[in-house]
Image (tube, rainbow, N blue to C red):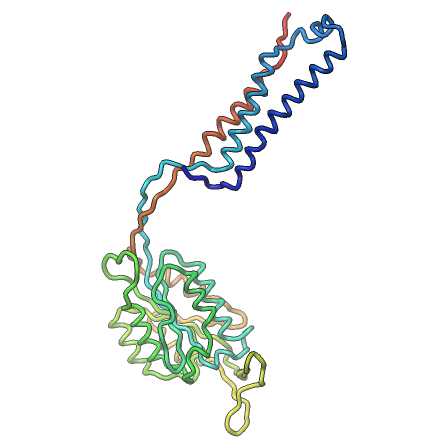
Length: 338
């Protein structure tokens, strides 16, 4: 037997407390009757009182308290094996962590806003396996495909430009790592048959490298549906520079001029021509527009899991306790005689 709420066992302490109170009440009644002095008068005043019924009512209340306390602890027993099949798609998110993603044209900056949007997307997913690729001028698989979304969130938290010091935005290298993430072995029960594959590239699209036409052809051959999310504004913004957590102004070129970065949507739209493109800006901060497209994709059985499930039995002591209280309430202590 297991207990769902073992911390509620303290409620059973009410049982001896109730016993003490009933004994104290009986002693008080006896003391008062002795103070009256006349046993004949006491018998006359209590002529309709059924002492046996009173004791049964007190016993019923104590028993009901014990049963209700037991119900609060949540008794569970009688385990049974249950099999659950998980259906969904394989989804890899490629996040741009280049230096331009630190621009603050969307608050608090492009990279943090992208992280917030990805985490919101994870909250709405169910059953899908998710992987994470980070990229700049190079790329690597940050998190393999997993159904543990909390692990993906942890990897997201530590994603920043220091992970990949190579400057640039190399879509070609990012796609190589996307393919590697799909092909990497994953733990758990293998899926039945081919799985639907989708990838979301989250970037500002600036200073990009890689043949987009070739990437799209490779994605088509690999059965990967490409989506894209552009982060930032097209008007341009400077890139903050910090050292040891302290701001050092903005990035400058060799001539000392402040470098500005802007969202380049054309490349991202081209990448997602067979999927869908969405923009993360000041006024649109989520990936909800992509979620409906992802949910519309054909799902497949990713895995089946077996686990033991306990049968909840709190209903029985709860029902019996309430029934006893109902009987105690309708049962009078006095016997009325015509």
